Structure formats: C-alpha cells, structure tokens
Image 1 (cartoon, rainbow, N blue to C red):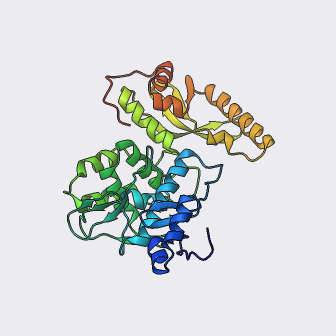
Image 2: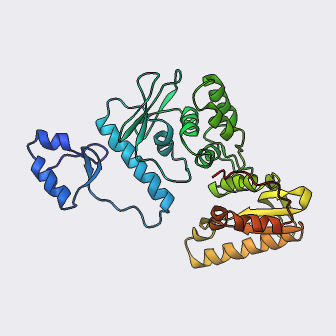
Image 3: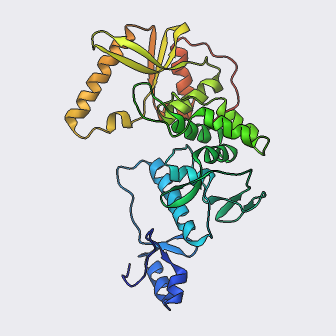
Length: 325
C-alpha cells in the first residue's frame, strides 16, 4: 500500500479521504491490483493473512470484527450490539457470522440494510467500550444475540460468558442471574421466548462449545440429562479429576474432546506427556465407573455417531425431538 495513502487509527484507507486528496484513481488502481482489499463500502485495507495457527472459527470471528471496525469508520456514533458486540467481547458462537453488522437503532423500531442491521431499542441500555468502540453491555448483547441467532449459537456464547469451572479461579464475564435479570427487565419484548429458551438451558459448567452442543444433542435424541464437571478422586494419581458428563444412575461418564486438547502443546515431548497423563486418568476413571466413552466435533455434528456412543454407555433414549442445532 503506498505510504501516501493516509490510514485511520484502525489501519483502514477511506475512499472519502482519497477523494478529498484527489487520489481516487490511484485508490482504484491499488484495489484492482489487489494491493488493497475492500472491507466495506468506502473502507479498504492492505491484505493481511490471519495466523496459520487460527482455527476456521477464529478466522470467521476475526472477519466479522474487521467488518465492525470498518463500520465504525463510516457510521455516525454507532453502538454495536448482538453479533457484533459479541464478536468484540471475544465470545464464540457456532455456525457462520452474519455479513451485516448489528447496531442499536436510534428509535424503538429497527431497520435492515445490505450491510447494517439496526436493532430496535427495547429500553434504557447500559453501554461499555471494547477496543475503543461503544457496545451494549455483555448482558444486553447476549439477550440480543439470543433473539437473532440459532439456539446453538446463542447457547455457546452464553455458556462461554458465564463459565465458572470448579478447578480454576477465573472470573466469569457475567452470570446467569444477571442475564435473567436483564431478560426480566425487558420483558415483554419481541423474541423474548427465544431468549428464555436459551437461558433455561444454560449452565456455568460447560467448558467448551463442544460440551454445550453435546448437551443439545442429548436433548434432541432423548437421552437423560447428565451432571457436569463431576469430581472423582484418583488415588493412584493422587489427584482429583473432573469429567465433562456423568450419569450417576447409569454409572456412565462421557468426555467431549476438541482437537485443541492435544494439539496445543508446544513440543513433541509435551504432547506425548499429555497423552500419557490423559490415558492414565482415563484408566483410573474406567475402574470407578461402569462405562466410559469420548467423542469429537465430527461425532457431535453428525448426531447419530454420538447417539451410538451414548447408547453404548447404557443410556436410555426417549422420543427424538426436532434438531436443536
């Protein structure tokens, strides 16, 4: 990118600045030569590849955040909410991020344009700043997301925000009580039943999006609801272990394992040690429970492979419901 093109604080080149400087044709040349890429109408940047270590979900979230920052250059005093605030807050979802950015509308009625969704104001809204941009509070942002997203996407974001794992001192971003209070404060409002459907299923004990989605599959296939993060004492290891899912009435344990659990180690030695430790943990657990199994993302997404594992644990299945993901 030619140095003479001024950039904003977020690293964007604006078409209006190029026109004001009489450099519109040069800007078009740079875009045609792919030395500048269009992020949003009138907003460009130098192509910058994402880190190789990022997952497809991380790349998609970053692409939406880029759209949000680009929109902040052209919209007048935007207040971001719903998907866009959730992206800025750094919370995950499942499925795709929308092409449009989500902002609060100036009145109690919303609007939808090709690149922007204006969300009707429901009531007085608490605001905060993230990355220099004004966003609705995490509670209000999640309520809005629950209105606009699928059940699975919204539940993943909510459970990530309220997660409070018993083996860590990490402070959750918010709590279920605060989310319910925000929902109650706004009720009645359009989409409030969708929000309640998410909050009624939410738990602070899901340690990953895969665990969240697995719970929806249990419900969909009619399997009993498990306890989460059940603690077991492992005498040989001299430590406590927490399992993702435990069905005490059936003596069964299930673990939802994302690839990152084993691929995030930095050296071959560390990776081997992690696998050995995990195998020893599993063997001790198997000696304490009647049945044990694991699954990964591909099993959960396909549905039936996960159900097959659950039936193999001896879990009874009731009538199947409509797909929840």
